[in-house]
Amino acid sequence: MSPLSRRAVLQASGAAALLGTAARTASAQESAQEATQQPVITRRIPRTGEEVPAIGLGTFMTFDKKPGAPRDHLREVLHRFHTGGGRVVDTSPLYGLSEVTVGDFGNGLDLFIADKAWATGEYLGDDSQVRRQFEQSLTRVWRTQIDVMQVHSLVNADAILPVLRTWKREGRIRYLGVTHHDPAYLPFLERYVRDGDLDFVQVSYSIRNRAAEQRLLPLAADKGTAVLVNMPLEKARLHHLLRNQQLPGFAAEIGATSWAQFFLKWVIGHPAVTCALPATTNPDHVVDNLGALRGPLPDQRLRDRMVRHLEAVPGFADLLTTPWYPGKTFDGLVRL
Image (cartoon, rainbow, N blue to C red; front, side):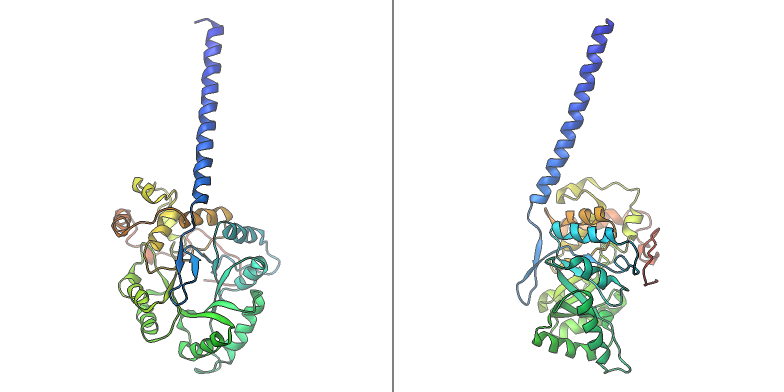
């Protein structure tokens, strides 16, 4: 082959490679665009029929920043969350300055705010502290009305729920609920759902922590109680465990292109779940999480297969005994 013809071949090969790369890039962009054009998965709040997106945003640790600390990345998290179709944001006065961050960056956005009351007063039955705390929360999140007010971790619930009922009648809150993150408290959550008038219950639930599906989730469905899910990603423990593992091929059946979408689609695949609340400080990660908000969800057959796949991963069985947020540090007011 002459130098000229060899050069021609190389040039042609290079051009083909560039065209191939461009085609793949265009295909990926088209796929991403098609995904964002799919309708957002919403769930109805049983007691009113109001619809909310099935993926929300938690703020524990992640939105807690000391005064003067850099926060622009959190502004971008909330911006991308909102523009990507998210609405439900969960926070609490117990989360350091997270309420402040939500209020500062969420002002003017159409957000569905789920806040909490963590108050005991000077003695059980004293509701003065929760009243002061509520006024502070309204100021921090820049609201005159809270969408969902929850008794945080059932603290003094019997004294606080009557106050929440009054606020609901007065229009200061729209819905009332209770929360806990510890599976040991599931029987207590079940009692309040079964015997009370709760609009919402918030519970920990993930592909590894499935205890809530035994009684609480079916009970909530029967009683018409909406379900918020905390710790759907097990506070980064699931990602840490699977960091060197590839997605199984069957993840394509539900359009999951990342482990976050795999885990979150499993959670909201349960028909009793209203909204899952993953938390992040990374704008790219919130976009990834919102990928679970579109496309097909797994049916029970596929959800079972997803569980079986992870049960074969070394360390999955012991995941709940490992520390939260492996490899991560936070510099807010709250300390674990």
